[in-house]
Length: 241
Ligand SMILES: [Mg+2]
Figure 1 (tube, rainbow, N blue to C red):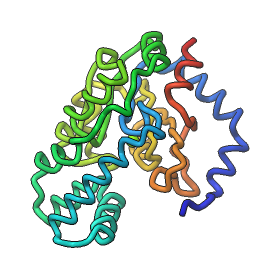
Figure 2 (cartoon, rainbow, N blue to C red):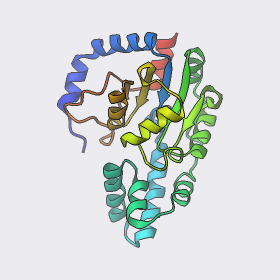
Figure 3 (tube, helix red, strand yellow):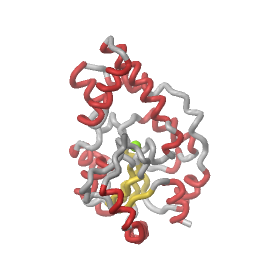
C-alpha cells in the first residue's frame, strides 16, 4: 500500500509556489525533455498493466516459477536496477532484444489521439525530446497513436543508453552528449520521481508527474523536484495557451 509521505503534505502546502516556479521555468527554458510511459500519456490508460503482465509471464517461464514469485523478482529488479530487464540481464543472461520485443507486444488501442497534447506541443517553442527506459519501436507506436510522432526532435531510448536505465547517472551524461542538450536550458517531465534526481544534479529543471503510484513517489526529503503536476497534457495545454 502507498504510504502518505510528509513530502506529499509539504508539496500541497507549497502548491502556489510550485505553480509560480513552473510558470517561470516555461518562460526561461527552451529544451523540453519528456519521459514516455505514464508521462506523455495519462496513467489511467495503464499501458503498463499489459507490459507488467507480459513481464510476469516472461519471468515465470524463465525461472519456471509461479506468478507471485515472478512478480517479486520483477519488482525487486525494478527497484534495484532501474528496470526489471537490467536485473534479468545481470542475473539470468536474458537477451534484451528478445525481452523488449516480447513485453511490448501489447494492444495499443487504449492510447487514443490526444488533441490537447497535439495543440500544446504545436505551441511549445524549442526542442522536444523523449528520454525513456523503453525502446524506440514501442515509443513510436505510442506517440503515433497519440498523434504526436512528428512533434519530437529525437528519442533517446534504452538501446541508445547502452541498456543502462534511468536513474543511473552515466545514462544522463550519454543522453545530453548524444542529444546535444544544455541541461541548464532543459526541463524534464517524468513520473518516476527518482529519475529526476540525476537530471536535477546536472542543472535541469524537474517536473514530477504524480500518478499516485507507490513506485513513482519521491522519498520524504527529496530536494530535486522543482514542480509537481498530475496531468501533463492538461497542464501543458493550459500553460501554452
Ligand atoms: Mg514513466
